[in-house]
Image (tube, rainbow, N blue to C red; front, top):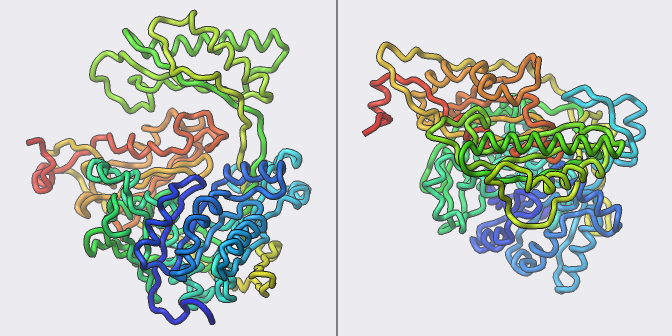
Length: 609
């Protein structure tokens, strides 16, 4: 079998975390001379809808064109000379067109590289079928959207079709929608011969992929202790995973590059955008990350072990994107006395006048409005007044069924600039335009209803999903130890006790809190309760939510994961929020004060000098 099947370890570089990531990643990773594989993750739900619109306008488009122009074109000779295998989901909604473009480039350079394509994820032609059988959204229970509004519809495929392509001699494998971590797991499956029931190994390989899939977020980007790495981030190193046949993972980065790889950066990325850490569902394996242990081996080298695997789901997740009206808005600055009050009054006046114009034009009311005064004492319910508020930004945004309705707001808010309270300003530029609202609909489909095809060069490789149904045990949440602070406590910030990272899953947000020391866990557990977190973010929660917040404990890395339901206003471009993806939620929560026994605070030097 070709490739690295006899190796005991492989090195995989993660060169892209989204469509538009830095072009420097590929040459930086190749320069190490250590890579066996290099993987690229380009796809998010909104990316799929953008690609679908591109394909509708030109049948030759619909994929991540950066992969051809910014990755392969300048680096193809190095990739070929080093024998590095390339795996990517750059195919988007048109993987065959992406593969054709790659082959044209390879032929033009006179190289001999085999390109493979994995298809079968694109289910857009079956949208009417899903609607007819009453498919419902897996989280909200909402019915399937109007078929004519659906822009894309894709199943999340796994790693084994990619591994089959590699085993058949592919040098470059291009897929459509697959789970982000599958591009990494596929390399492991091919290199080590892992089987579909090697669940603990598959979980470790998937965790490696999860750590690589967001690029420099694992090597210092978005790190809680940003001051320690900020000077080196312009030259931040992209992550590399050294993975052994036993499943052990060592995360590192190119020597001499910026950023850092530490227990903190790796733990933050591990908890990023997950829900229940004991039930992280992927098409190849259901992962349990609760017992994962992280060990600093050396500078910029962290060992990752302990992921558990408990079978594989009998279904594939399918996500559709669909049009749901239009949105638009703008951000203004007000400064001077009572800037926050002036901002709110200005926003109210803009909405009042806009609604009057809507009535005059016989247009319906806005379907949703959003006003956020950024910098005011009450914004996010987190800031503490340290003096009069003299400068704020106010974001005013709306949704409407038609672009005409959004255009009314955009025109009237400019028209009211001379009718505003004093101190109004904005960065000069053209008036914003209405943009379509793209919503996400996710559901489940039996695996045998998805036909996956693997094409290596001009030949189709026989591939059949060998999923074996297995009994999946019930999940029992780990209970964190709690401890009282005693008679003489001191108040310290949560940030002094823990790292934090937050992200989004549709309209849900998660906040990972990782204790800096195991001794801090009982005090965090006792005080940072679900009720306290729910109260802290109450202004984001939908009224009457039964379970607005869940808390999970990960004893292996002394961490907690908080899952906040329905707090992002729909998430992504469906949301009018300034932080539609919950990226800053951890930063807010880290400002909370917790009590600690004075003796513990003294031992860890947490008291003011």
